[in-house]
Amino acid sequence: MAVIEVHDLQRRFGSVQAVRGVNFEVKEGEIFAFLGPNGAGKSTTISMLATLLHPTAGTAKVAGFDIVREPDRVRHSIGIVFQDPTLDDRLTAEENLQFHALLYNVDSRIVKERVPKLLEMVELLDRRKSLVRTFSGGMKRRLEIARGLLHHPKVLFLDEPTIGLDPQTRARIWEYVRGLRDQEGITVFMTTHYMDEAEVCDRIAVIDHGQIVALGTPSELKALVGGDVITLAANDQEKARQFIAAQYGEPIVTPSGLQFEVTGGETIIPELVARCPTPVRAISLRKPTLDDVFLKLTGREIRDEPPQNHRPRMARIHGGR
Ligand SMILES: Nc1ncnc2c1ncn2[C@@H]1O[C@H](COP(=O)(O)OP(=O)(O)OP(=O)(O)O)[C@@H](O)[C@H]1O
Ligand SMILES: [Mg+2]
Image (cartoon, rainbow, N blue to C red):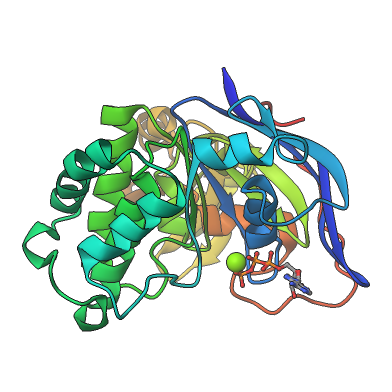
């Protein structure tokens, strides 16, 4: 069942077309990511889905409710962790959660029961009486996630949940997010520009200049690159080159050997080694990464500045519309 349905959603700020008509669905219990560079339109899309920003055109439903016609019902079905921190530094961890409960009209009995549970989940129970001002970046982020969960949302929006955090804290936040999905069946919509983070999501929409340029599971996206990358070193390089060129296309000569792309690399390797007309000294297989995908689709690294008048190429896999 689709928990988020988005049809031709658009948003313009003056002359800036921030989101240019995106279409996608997120299924119940899915961890879905928007992966894209700075200014791609990720936060703008989240803000529209969370009813904080009006779309210029298009429609979307979250948890079955229309984001324009039923914003209150949408708000009660979602939790959101913003890109920029929004905790009150002058309050304690516990007070921040209680204040949020007040805003959302959460029953006081439920608050009493749920606040300690959530603080325990994000390992902040022993710091519940500390002022947030005294927390590290990672602790604040964890508290924000706990706060986003207080009213038992169906969908959790996380805008760059781990940006600027150290690898250990990032890994820990990921544990919570996956745990939530597994234990509470929550649907997670997140944005990131970390490739390794997108890698562990169920599906990814690659967004660039306000448009989805590819949508699919990490392995589907990587399949767009064309296959596995094999590097082979042989006793007689020229003989090996001729053999590879005839079978798989002209290889690239690299310091570590001859490099070429194949599909289903694992099954090809034994045959390759057996049939190569000269003894194989070393062979390695590398799976394509999401970096390779982004590079192939947009012609740039994800952290590069966008070139002028760039038109992203469309490569849609099933799942989006
Ligand atoms: N309130 C606003 N007023 C004017 N322009 C805006 C506003 N919010 C966003 N934009 C513009 O819309 C485009 C998309 O911005 P958005 O914040 O959605 O990008 P993003 O993908 O979240 O980027 P980042 O990775 O840097 O967070 C940018 O060109 C940005 O300058
Ligand atoms: Mg953003």
